[in-house]
Amino acid sequence: MSNFDSKELRQVFSQFPTGVTVITTRTSEGQPIGVTASSFNSVSVAPPLILWSIDKGAHSLEAFKSCEYFSVNILSDQQILISNRFAGRGQDKFDGVDYTNGVGDCPLLPEALAQLQCKNWNIYEGGDHLIMVGEVVDYKITENRRPLVFSQGSYSQASLHYDVLNTEQVDKVAQQDFLEDHLLYLLRAAYNQLSKVFYDRINTVAGVSPETWRIYACLADGESLDLDTLGRLVMQPRSALLDTLNRMSPDTQFDDKTARLSKEGIEIAQKLLMVEKQYKKELSERVEAGSYDAMKATLLELY
Image (cartoon, rainbow, N blue to C red; front, side, top):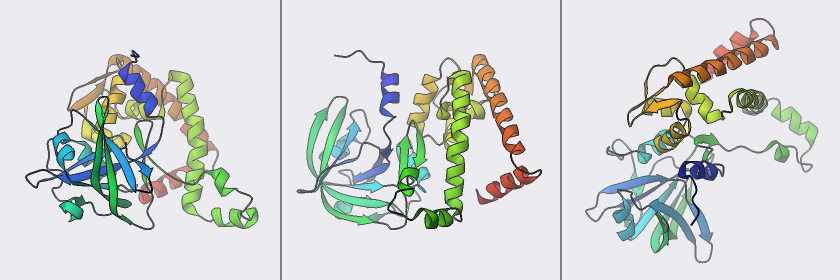
């Protein structure tokens, strides 16, 4: 048996981007229950089978093992709060959620990108997880939404790769005219170009990744921040946030409620903020006087 470091192995696994789902069913007493899962995958078209895995220590394990039906709610990129809600513990996850009932009265979450209603087909051992295989009995897709993506410990978004956008099958001149008049494309293209330069610099200076940089920045003042707030700011659910904070040790000090930087962590954060300050100065010098502040104000208004 391989003696891998579990924290490092989770980090390796996180390099593979996945979608985000909320799996729902009902307990034997009829109570709705749901968990956030990124382990969802398709298995077969004939018969129509899917799978997902659940931790053997999960509070909802017995409900999913014994249920006849469950639903897979594939989340859109506008549903980070729903993902965080069902990833947490100690609250009524369905409180205030305007869900409907599908096959077997399994809850169907509103505004989901897609929904798969499944019959519990088989269960397999999978180490510290159980692999749940479901047979799809009904499905639904919501048009004009994009998937929520989880990659490298943070939420992300899916967009067409620029190589696809520049395929020879599309007239490049017409395409350029269209894209250069498309605000979202320009924002995305600018972000991709500018963030790469910045992320390369902070990695060179302190060997940090984008997700750890955001945590250093949020905690740079040395004060404690509650985990829910920190998770929203750095776009990580609690489980991924705790993994990241663990990897940042001994630069972080945290418990199940709050997190802060240690003295060593604050020193690194200040060094990173100097890199950010210098890069911001370079960007402001690339545009006309006053344009940087106007651009920032416009982005804040849109945000």
